[in-house]
Amino acid sequence: MSFWKNTGPFIAKSSFIRGGVSEASKQGLMVAGEHVLGVSNSQTPHEDGDLEASGAVSQDPQSGATAISYDTDYAVVQHEDESMQHDAGLNAKFLENALNSEREAVLDIVAQAIRGKLGT
Image: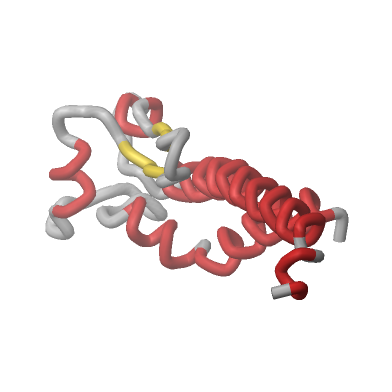
């Protein structure tokens, strides 16, 4: 029982670190989301740029759940229909491809945000 009696400062510090890491993770996810959106936008089919311009990163402030989305009537069709013809370098699955290709970068961005918070 005496072990737990002397852990007050540790528990307080641990709570501070968990809170800081959680906040840093949320910030890192937003930065990583913007990075993925940029990569996705570079592959987004466009005639006039509306699809690319509708891209956004959003985050639930409580959970930190982060979403990358496009907001046009045709975004899902453009993303899913692989039979559509696009200019070189532009393609269907633009968001999916960006998420897959940038997996390591996302992990690095979030880790960097956490390290920055911890001062390491």
